[in-house]
Figure 1 (cartoon, rainbow, N blue to C red):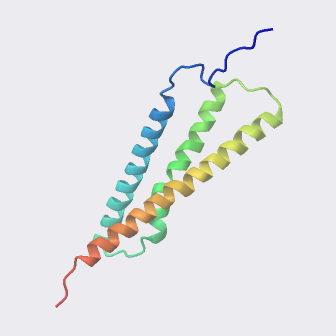
Figure 2 (cartoon, rainbow, N blue to C red):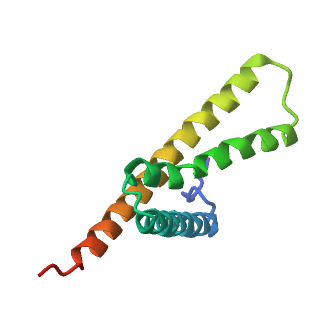
Figure 3 (cartoon, rainbow, N blue to C red):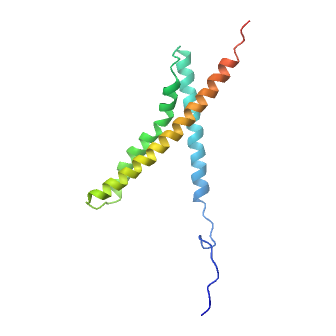
Amino acid sequence: MASLPPRSIWMDQYYYVFGFTFLVFLILIITCSELSMLLCYFHLCSEDYHWWWRSFLTSGSTALYVFGYSFIWFQKLEPSSMFITYLLYFGYMFMVSFVLFLVTGTVGFASCLWFTKKIFGSIKVD
């Protein structure tokens, strides 16, 4: 009995989906960062200095869109009528959305903190 030659997991084919997914993730991080800094700047211009939680929630709200879209996607999956199907899908989507909320919220907060330190560090006081 001849043994088969070892094959790679991807059958010697290139999959670009991981590169595209990483590129989209980078675009998401940059967009959340810029949007948080912009809204932080608007609040600072109107002399509202309570930007800490607002910067976290502004960019973290991306997760609400993802969780909301999961309802639309679930209708297209044609699920079975078992309760466990709904529980598993929405349980996992809640966890994924919560992790996305923490990641994008942290990015928004960190970028706002950096931005605020930069603009207040550039003020010259004599």
